Image 1 (cartoon, rainbow, N blue to C red):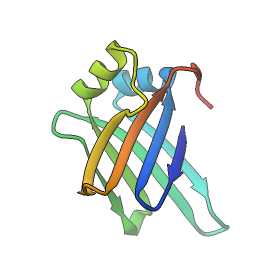
Image 2 (cartoon, rainbow, N blue to C red):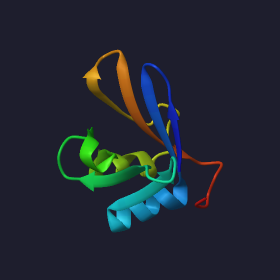
Image 3 (cartoon, one colour):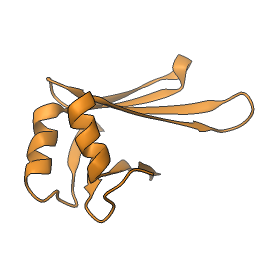
Length: 107
């Protein structure tokens, strides 16, 4: 899983294997230790409602909620470079999930 942050977007890129795991199990999680006392926690969950994202400050958890059907459709066809975009905050701030076809395994 790669997370790229820009001033106007957050792009999350996962491998095909991770996307298949997400479809089957409904959850991918990753934690990065920032220092001795601080972690940044990230999760991707599948949901039956519209895709969304949020940040829980008390848990330092960024949660990306991806519509399961949208993910299945993205996997069914050749995944696009655009990925599954969430215009969560305003049209100029984008969060997107991309599936990397070149990377078939997890890291």
